[in-house]
Image (tube, rainbow, N blue to C red; front, side, top):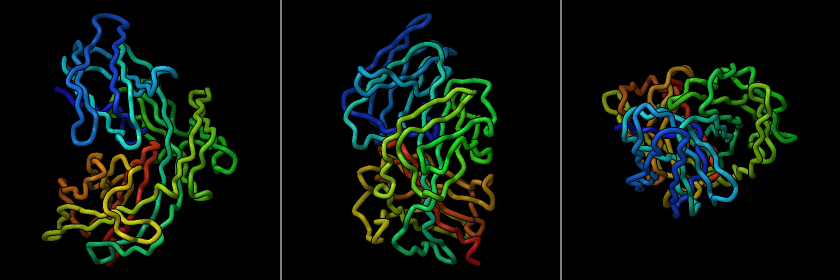
Length: 328
């Protein structure tokens, strides 16, 4: 049995729970069957009985009236596929799913918001001066179920007035056309520091010569900023795990738990270059407060630790702490 996340790690949208309605639409052959729907570890999952090697597309809707959104196409590797929706469940009340045989290109759009919060120095907990504010942002355009993807410099971002992006090419260093699931990739804009917070409004991505438009709500980024404050556990010079508490970004006060807008969290441990990732955890439920480091990581080689979380509006926040490599 394969387990497939039908959204990639970067592309996370608000997940709607409560009423779960399933439909199958056959383009050819026998229609697949949904079965064994459940909430597992805070995430919705469902299994599909389907002919092996069949290409299929998952679509979602919030109300059955305003159309369906394709969230990914993939090929079944066996007769029983498990799909896990890693988009989170906070603040929503219903979601409808359907599946049809065949593939279709789908697109999505979100923001990456960055904050530099402090550094570890020679300690196992970082030094942080509050208040912490967002420093910069980047726009992210996701493609699923498409082939012959253009190079990053041929994809262009245009945001609302004052966004800092006007027909601006995607950044090759932070873009990828190597999707884990099916044909697709991610295109990320240049990182913008003025303004530091992404604006809502009409966003346009020019992809393969056509404009793909998104009406983006106010991301409420300032009010959705929280600081997952990490503590490293190190034994014999090796990083064993990282635990964290949540702190108010303005006052530094420790919160009783994760904020209601958070849908998942991830630990990222960086090496001495952007291409040298030492460890990335899975996307974890927001109530999680510890992650074992399953890779072999020498603490003195760590250049940075990032606590990355997703919010209910589908945006990603990356809170960075400078690692001990710079503290000696």
